[in-house]
Length: 246
Image 1 (tube, helix red, strand yellow):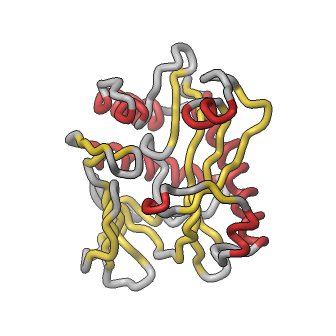
Image 2 (tube, rainbow, N blue to C red):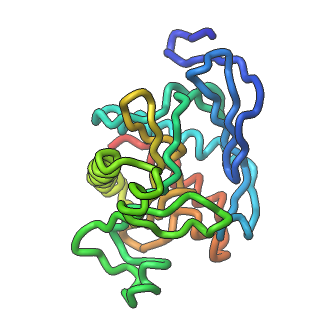
């Protein structure tokens, strides 16, 4: 393993560990570190809808890198170590908890349909939801008691996950607001490293819903889900606005 004067790690990519819909994880010479590569593919509805565009992996890697580093400045622990190439980052190897945590600030999509809320309604209080990460089961919604009973996480771990998710929400709402954007909702995944819980996976327009504050233009994967077009243009615009100073 070598590092340059910017602190970036140049790891030797070894065997494939896991390939998902949007990313690939590779082993490295360090058993505690992995290389996470972002693909150009887009998927929706549990992988039943598929697409891609050139440069998506670079965009998502740049956005995730920036947002992980931003969270670390607020003492939020993540698996991020360093960006290594345009499409790859070095990350800590975690024991992942198979639960997706979704934080909602504004009503849209399933929340609107399920509870008969108008799309765009600002919620009086953020909602935190938990989903079992299992495509074959359709990622069913669960609660904390399911997590305890099925051995996915302890009560203490679920309390910590909720606290961190709430903190991230507060940090990101302010961050996006300064860039003229609304944080509608977002998904986090957590993993264990020794006795610590760290945020893993990614933070990108694939895992967040983000709207323009003035026009409510969707700036995320919903443009692909619902055939709105200009997916590549919007992802690039979002990257530029996220990486801008402010």
